[in-house]
Each structure stands twice: as structure tokens, then as C-alpha cells.
Amino acid sequence: MKSKKNIISNSEVHPLILSIAKELKRVCDLLGIGFFLMYGTLLGAVRHGGFIPWDDDFDVGMLSHDYEILLSEFNKIADKRYRLIHYTNTEKYIWPYAKIIDTCTSMYEKTLKPPFDYGLFVDIFPFYRVDIKKEKTDDFRKRLLSFYRINMISDFQFAPGIWKIANLWNLLLYTKEGSLEGNGFKYLKTSPCEINKKLFDFIAKYISNGGRSYFSGFLDLANDFRLYKANYFEDFVTMKFEDTEFLVPKCFDEILTNDFGDYMIPPPEKARKGGHIENAEWK
Image (cartoon, rainbow, N blue to C red; front, side, top):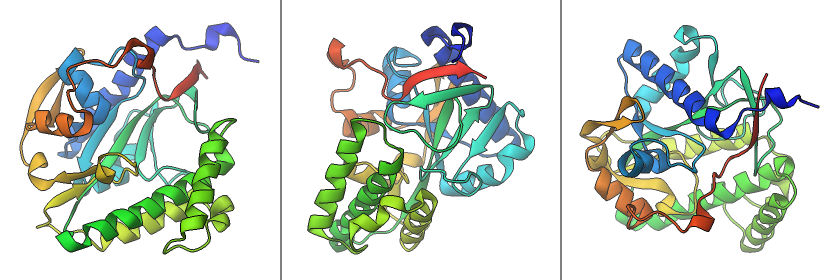
């Protein structure tokens, strides 16, 4: 059993995560590439000037060509305290996007118990420019829904307690409806890495420099599976986040409105909860 002195307090979490983001910024500047704040982190920058007080993660986006450079180079030049993990370099990795972790920490999430050790993190979502004909949009989303359910089914093996019920519901629903991927039960023991590779192979068919949309590589039932207009990521401005400035899309208002509606109004107090960390500890 860990000593209480090893527990990372809530007040320590945000500064530690921000330190990861600062190291990411330093490395990206060295490499001549960029990233931008997205999702709840972008909302935090606009509404709070930093972290949403009850949030416990940090999300950034990268255009795919910059993302590929980061995957290749980060671990070579970053401070050794920090490590980029991804399904291409971490056995049994379960997400379709990369994380940069603080290796001096360990953490446990509420919804998943992955079969490897990792610490406090920053999520990095690749944004792929895609060309999807209007008449094919429904097919694209249907296929992504299949991947979403496959991920949920595969995650069943790592889900604690009540979260297994949610994953089981996806398994039953998925199997009843059927899909291009066949019977859902076979994915109960499928490697998440294998699924992530199949997802990328699928997305690759649509990648186009002249595409009208960006897909963020983030499987979610909300927001049309994170399809965004291409012009959202043509211009960027700097915005203060805590004691540091980061890039954000210039049209952040339209992005946040699409993602959250009237985003300047905080949610009810009972809904103000972090979605990830169950507990975090010093190693």
C-alpha cells in the first residue's frame, strides 16, 4: 500500500500537467512544428484563462504532418522525465491518439485500467484533412460508429466495475445491428493496437490536401465524430493559459459553439467533475 506522502494532491495536478504542456511546446519550437489547444482545454483558456477548475486533463490538436514528426522525434530530444506513448511504441496501448506522460507519476483513471503503467498526461489528437463527398458522409460516420463500438468492446477487458456494463451494452447493440466488421463478440480479446491500425488505414483512404474537413482521430459519439471545417485550422492566435501562451484556432468561438453550445455559461455545480483521474501518485 502506498504511503499518503506519495499521493499527488488535487492542487498539484494542474501545475504538473501544465509542465508537460510546456515541455511539448519547447520541443515543438525546436522541431519547427506547432500544436493548438482544443476541446475542454480551449474552453478553459477562453472562459477561465487556464484550466477549468474541475477539469483534470489537457487536450491539444496537431495537423497530421506535424503530428508524425512529433511521434518520430519527441522521445529523442525531450527531457527524459517526459515520454510520448502511442500504439506504435507501447505494447497494449489502447487509444487512437498519443499521450505525453510524466514518468515521475502514476495515475489511475475512472473508466479504464490499461495493462501498462502511465502517469499524468497531455492528450495529443492528430487532425487529418479528409475529402468526403457529401453523399458519402453518412457512410463515413456509420463506419466510424463501428470503430467506436469495436473500441468499447475491446476496452471491456480493461474496464473496471460499472463501466463494464456500458461496454457490454455496446457489445449487445453492436452485435444485434451487425456491421462491416462482423460479429462483435470476436473483439472481446482483440488488441486495441490492431483496432487503432485498422482505424488509421480507414482514415487514410480519405486523406486529401484539398479536403473540406478535418477529422481529429478521436472517436466520440458527439460532434459528428469530430469532423471540423478545414478553414478552422488555417489561422491561429496566441492565448494566455495560466502563466503561458499557447496557440488556439482564430475561429475558436465557432468551434466552441459547435462543441459546447453557449459555452460561456458553466454547467450546474453537480456536473463540475473531472472525468479522468481516480487517483495519482508519485513514483
